[in-house]
Amino acid sequence: MVVNGESSLTDAQVWSSLICACLGNLLIIVLFAGFLAFNGVNTVGILVLTALFIFFNREAAKNLYKFYDSYNDTLKKRNPNSKNSETLYQISETHRVTRPSDKICWILFGCEIFFLLVFPFWMLCDIGNGPIAHLFALLALFSAFRHYFNVPVVLTELGNLEYLDGKFIRGRDFEEPTLEDKAEDWLEKNRLSKIVARISQGARKDTWSNIIAGITVIFFLLFLAAFGAGSNNGSEADTSNLLHDFEYKPLPNTFKYPTCSLTSDFALPGSNETALADYTFLAGIAYNSPESMPELLDTWFGKDVAQDNNELVEEYRSGLETDSAVHYKLITFPKLNPEFAIVDIRGTNNGWDMISDAQLWSAAWLAQAVRAVLPLGAIWSPIIDNVVEMIGVLQTETLRHVAFYVQTADFVDHLKDQNMFKELRVTGHSLGGGLAMITGAQTETPAVALSGPNTIITRNTLEPKVSLDSLDKYTFNIIPDRDPVPAIDDPAKNYQRINCLASPSRFVDCHTATRSLCDILYTCGSGNRPVLCECVAFGYPEPEPTGDRTFKRACKAFL
Image 1 (cartoon, rainbow, N blue to C red):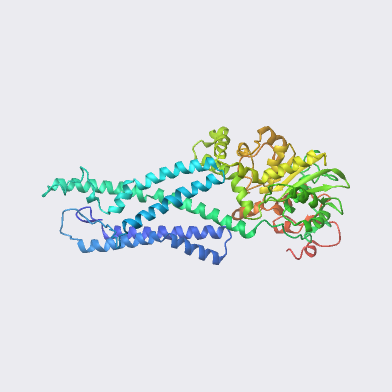
Image 2 (tube, rainbow, N blue to C red):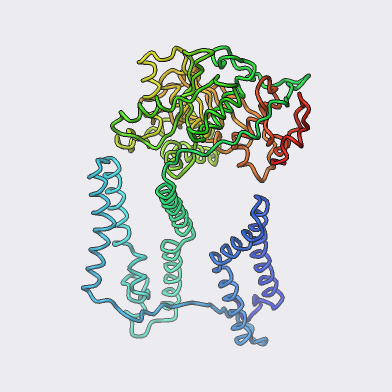
């Protein structure tokens, strides 16, 4: 701060700076709390998260106090009669209380080399992940050289620029340095100090350190969730929300979804007008347990029309050398068409599923993010899949063998090889939808996905690779508005966008399979399928009764 002279700060300038800084910090806190409230967080959650936000940003409060403390020092040095400009600097100095012995230093150095370099490299080689092991060794060596042979580290250890040799430090080379030498020394030291500070403790370094630490914590929590939750068998059924004595008629005088009935190739046995709703329903019930499937299928399709062939699926899985955590069902229609079957793949339901999501689509998501922030980023779209393919080269054969899509594709191929069914379809929701599209493209089997992540960018990282032509021929994705999951990767040619009536702050709700089913039933008409009680809670009008019950009476448990 300039204390004296014509350029000295006035009290009004100092206090206005303090007030602006306080208001700015307060505004950031209010915006953070407002963002939480916008996304539906309750009052207790807002208070706790805001308190944590303030705690992790307490450095801003410390800086304000330092500024105020410096202002108090200026009051002591202020001389209204002085015409010379005088500046007051606030500096800090670190003193080492204890000094480790050389033996301790060498032990710590050896531990760093072993646990941070040798041991990880050894484990990567031991599991056969050669490409990652060599990449890790190269990056580790660069990091080691940058850390152990780095000027900022030396300066941090010395704690004082006076101990460095150089032409800019002449003060200790002369018994009586001149005033010009001292001034030049001060300028050079000040410049070097700023450079070192930006290198060793710059904002960018802190930002990237926080990002990497955050990603590490997220993956650690995913692993904990995976081990804690395991791979469960699904939830129990509740069919009390499915009403046969109510209906939604197709919207009149409107352009309803062109794919409400799909094509004859995709139609399920017994009905074509509700094909889109049928696939959506099946994708949603893939999360349910095998014990609850008969009740769900009978309520939707009719008594004994559709069956869940869990025994056939378990028999196939029991003969595999390497099993994975993926869950899928085989739905058949023995009375209407015994040669028609649907492989129904479950979506993200636990930690293992989340890890599979990250394994398959993290590179594509990062590539999309980079493309979005680059000026004219769309011009890189023709080669973005090749960039992701280069990243996928680092994936080991071990990871490819346990990838979820490998088993689902093998299962479909197994059904085809055994000539069990002449017509096979694949469906799924969320992760299951993405796996369904990969499985369909690899096995040339029509696949209908609901809210599935797409595969255009990811296709060259798969084994075997998937062509654009196969994705365009055999895959179809139902994409609700504002659903974040199908925004991952680029869609193929065949997809249907549907409405989502969730509030803008609850965009994640657009990923719910039940909400999507309600929109399709309301827009396309329910036909001979039941309607759901939840549809009214989602913002759709009450369906028309076909019997004596009122809707409120039928759905009193859900309203």
